[in-house]
Amino acid sequence: MTTDHRPPTTGPVLELTDVSKDYRGLRPLRIAGLRVAAGERVAILGLDQTAAEVFVNLVTGASLPDRGHVRLFGRSTSAIADSADWLSVVDRFGIVSSRAVLLDALTVVQNLAMPFTLDVDPMSSEVRERAVALAAEVGLPDATRDRLVGELDAGGRFRVRFGRALALDPAIVVFEHPTAELSGQEVAEVAARCRDVALARKTAAITLTADRDFGERVASRVLALQPASGRLSGDGWLSRLRRD
Image 1 (cartoon, rainbow, N blue to C red):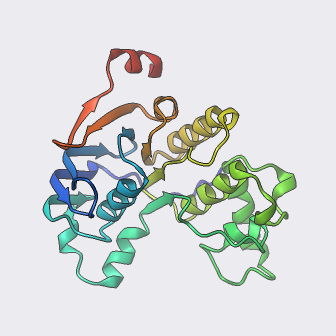
Image 2 (image 1 turned 45 degrees about the vertical axis):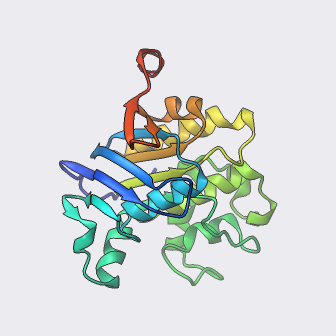
């Protein structure tokens, strides 16, 4: 487990207020209100994969809402001045998504080293040590470290993406439909690992999923999106009971 993390962020790390974004879907993506505190784990049900990508672009400041406000660490995304400013914001996010490109012809450790350096063949002993630590943190077995990523199953590839997302010590980790490519037997183990890593790092985690069970396992607060109104409602007393 890595230990050189950034200091904890105080106050809400993310706030969406009366947000609407047209993306040529059946209806715009609407979020009436969402506040995520530092270190909080939230799951959101009701966003398909396209809408989830739109959500990620909004919260990272890659795109601006047509209406409403997105605030990151107390600052509106509309105040991001230029590309350098935006990159400093994005560095505080870890995005775990199947859209993240893995290099199948490189090993697990080489892929995990890439957030630190592009000099991965050969790589320095210091960089390798950091990459190996990430592999252990996300639950990749020792035997996979020097295997080609193209040889891994879906669970292994998910863990490599997860490790890369953690590399720069993000304040917020976003899981974008994490179970879409996993087998049923992997879901509980992966959910437990995602939850435990977020807790250990004291990082906020936002899980966008259609898998209610995964959401309940990984998050302390599960919300369901009402697409027409954009309201995010709690998932009821039974879900809260199962999470406690």
